[in-house]
Length: 54
Length: 267
Image (cartoon, rainbow over all chains, first blue to last red; front, side, top):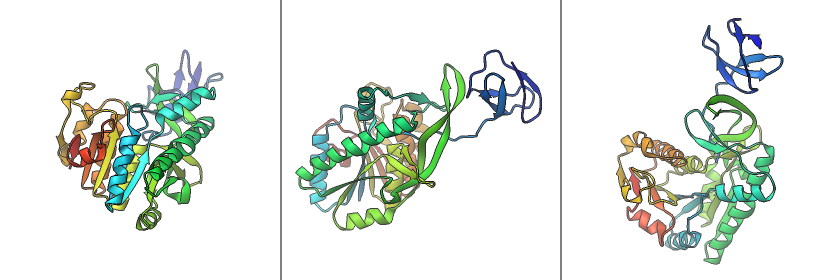
């Protein structure tokens, strides 16, 4: 499964992507979120702080 | 002024805690009580066929994944059962307790995190539709108005987001924010262990004193939920609270013992 990094346009191939998974672009190092598995779609991962729930 | 946090885990003896609150309140001490909900929310979720899902953050903190259905269960347990029956216990002892959650009067306000990062099977991922957040503002005027009229506010660990959503918040850190906002002399965090343990679960390894400048380093000794309590302690001290005590909530006179220095005293 292939998609392009939204930051640097590098081509990224993933074997078994999981929706919500965070990967790192091997070219530019940006953290990317898998927003769709098939077709594979990637977006920049939100930079969340700690989760503070009870 | 004392802010007390009672954990939501099993083992804490509410009869002993409430009896001690009665003694302190009758001596004229102003008290704010914050409670947890963990065990009751888990039990209610099981009964309703919606068991809790606990997730771990990349930093190693665990918390409850709170989608809208989970939030409903959490509110039922926190405000419906735990809060009301704590108020009932205190009222039976002649303490004029008043139950609130952070949603009421925008008592606790903060940012909702609708997406959280978790680690699952060694992989990081994003979970969405979450109703958790972190308390950033405390309506101290509301609490002072109640305290001046000799009420004992009993607060459930919910807050309201700036957009008006109810959110599940960490009770220890919410208690720290309240203690800071009110300029409390003490924040007492009661748990089902004697305090912070050097070698968990060996209760003989209790750390009796921590210098306020060393509190963040002591997080290395904390296991599981104790990590957030240490973080809360650090924040409370940073906000001007003079002393934070982790103490045993299972024993008789737990608050008097804590105030005598039994537990982990951080100052």
